[in-house]
Length: 86
Image (tube, rainbow, N blue to C red; front, top):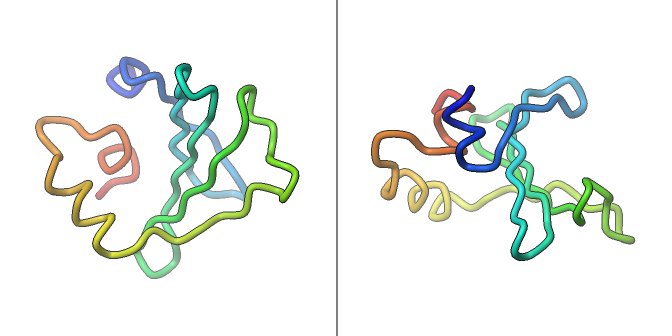
């Protein structure tokens, strides 16, 4: 997954699910994305260092329009969609 690392990302496993983790050094946040059972994508945001927010950083389902937007800007490699197999 060297291509993913070029985007500041890596693959981790959360609750037994393959998860794409992207680090945003500017915002000092970590974004995690994983597939849902129905083929959607859920996301959560962590603080720098992978520390959850005080509310526990819950997983939130991305809307169908958000996923379509990701697909529309795909290009040759997409750091979220390609590692998740979409």
